[in-house]
Image 1: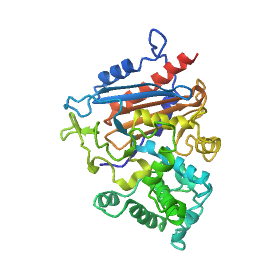
Image 2: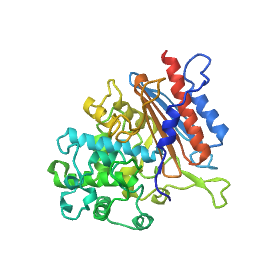
Image 3: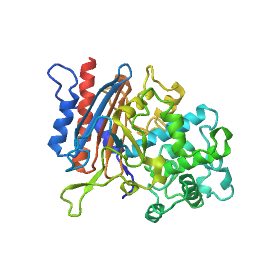
Image 4: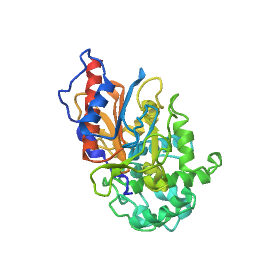
Length: 384
């Protein structure tokens, strides 16, 4: 399995694109029709989408296709989908929750995040902050090494120990990139997860809990009602399977439900979450004004482009600042190479759109992007 891959730039381009898109004859959203047509046109194994708004909650959910190619078992709207790097916005939210509780602070630099490594941290990491890690400006390499990826599959130590060991190794050496420059980094998010776990070990109230437990308790469980539906880590244990091309590269082949069907579990903070469409959308509605809203201080911090307004990335979110049609739009996309998930959020419309598929190739990318644009335009037209 390859590393989690970056899908932000393409999403931002799609958010900036405005096209003449067909609306249902009655002027209302026709999600099931659109999902069916899009999947059939591209020949995807499965495709799913959810549309939600701050005032109405879940507007519509639609799924189409098979859980596993050739299995003749249709996907269900309650099934979970692997969301890949869309986990990053949840990791950033977890740190924000810790700040809210008084356990952490914004602006904390690496020596403060890892006090046990005093004297072992390379000089070029000294001024890197948690914001730098969460905005891909730390100088961290895009990914961990191939050697680590392979060995992690056979590492039976607890996940927090694996991440702590990785952080100690990485922080002792000069960063691969330059502090302050944007380089999309899964490694940076693993370091952020390790920092959260280091904090938990030093904080009696957090009881040394792992990233996975803290995300479940402080983010998902504290989200809007229904936000826990379908949440978990790694490949979904039931329901849909991810797909990759077979040996000859001609057809898609289901990858199963074992840990081998995902990146090593220690990559969790960078992208190993699976989620149902409904649960994921309900949680993301908390980023919008409305009855489910997070505290304004958290939303402002996580959604403000970093380090300044010229950036097209905030903390866990891509930002399309030039979308004049609907104001500022936010989004992210994630894939572990056998799934693809794309999130679009438009605050001016109070709108969240998620489109997922259980394969990753060019036609999957194109379909997910085009359907996301179509649904935003439909909801915009219905709002007028």
